[in-house]
Length: 296
Image (tube, rainbow, N blue to C red; front, top):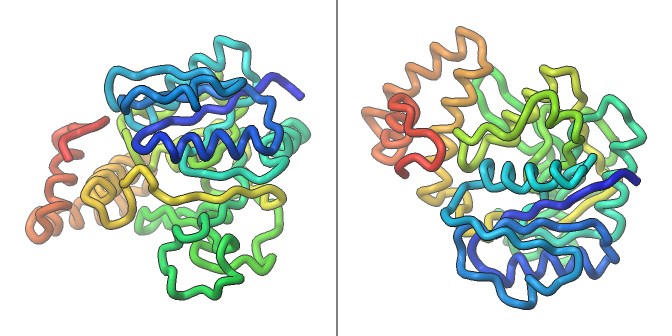
């Protein structure tokens, strides 16, 4: 196995990050972990004393893209050949990390790969929809799909109970930053994450850049993890979620979409300016180049 690093961005509740790290150590993980403390309170000894864990304290909230970039740069300096981005609000299954690395190393053209991801029990979007036996098997990500006509990025299978319907290894439109293996050669060819995004769409953008550079992006359902889904309080419907999704969707669309779709985005922008106070702020943020953290 080639030298690899896991990168986790911490923000919010330290117990969430500690649970993630304990799940890694609980399955015998020996891969070094870099934790970026994204301007939260100092982390406890329970985290900083864990074996294989290096904590890097950020002086401000860098956002998902920039914080991961800082971790990636450290890992590259330490000669990492594979880098695994892992959300702090996840719990890993046995063999997740080793199998992701093995799968990537045995497939030369693969640049990025993500596993199957379930909602952690109690963190489903529609909790009342499921039977008790379904919990822990409700899909959060089974591949990524981009609607290029409307510029929407969706998770394949989201909210479905897993009955094996997404058990085929396949190429996909985007890997998710919730858990994404990136090969060193991808980073050397296309660079780091676009920090203009700050939060949301950066993984979709990075996947497109990788695909355009000739790499394959894959979904591997043979391994999986559980996601507590926005445990850092930026969940669907929140002000931050709506702001960054609206602004970054425009940014992504104008980078990659067809001329016809760009025209439709301009018309949609005017509609938001006239009818939606929250989205108006996001639209203005894009058009006045208030990228990165912006002014939500």
